[in-house]
Image (tube, protein in one colour):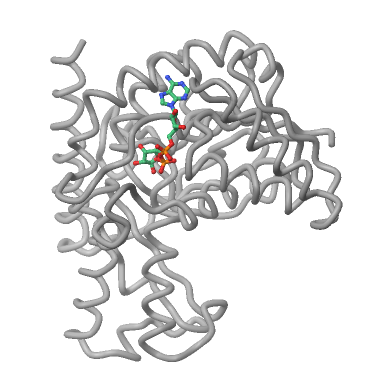
Length: 310
Ligand code: APR
């Protein structure tokens, strides 16, 4: 393949993302992990499935970052997932050190890559990666809004008994309890869901969306969601690799947009070959803006924690 994507962290999210990338035949894939044997074993296993799945993506597993050289995209999933009773924010101490370390290593070999961050707490980890890489803001992107919007879409489709393909949703803000699902901009075949459901039902779906990660954690008990997070990261990668210029909600570093300064938060962006090619500023009601500001304050708080961690 003429494109190369490295996935750092060969656990649940990383290995599933690798599988989706190769099965869609988007690129060659390098899996990296700190545990010896795991990325090599998973890459080989996926390569052995290739004849049946009918793709010619090459897969390599490694502990050494040299294998990742000249990647177009690096997806960072390294870190610990949460367990029942934990919030994403509880992961910050451990994952900040891991994300800093892996970013510093990977950029030595892929100085022109676009970084897609998946490790949690997402918005804070984007700050860590931006600083550790020194990359321009268009090349550090957080995966959260695509996942949260997919969850909202799935719940809308279940509620109305319609195809998920007819649904569209926008969830903005930080990837946490303060995320901001936007029912006005969430539609079924172009019809806002505010025309199709009662306020009570919409509120219930919004609440379930904001709690979507925790709902899965409480069921799995030993880790967090990975199928949908991997799908979301791969949709972003595909838009970049194919220069599709999809408009997707992603964590982007804002410098003035939406009245936010020097802050990663989920907003609609155009994703193409250059990474974030545009931040789309949509008009928000006072209530929606207040919710976004509240979410921004939660991310600011985590920025403060990062500062104290050093
Ligand atoms: N370098 C490389 N890999 C690392 C490092 C490191 N310094 N530290 C940890 N890892 C690897 C682990 O060895 C493990 O294989 O990261 C992988 C994480 O995989 P899982 O434990 O299965 O976690 P996963 O469910 O994939 O979630 C990863 O994504 O969605 C977020 O909140 C989630 O922060 C978590 C991350």
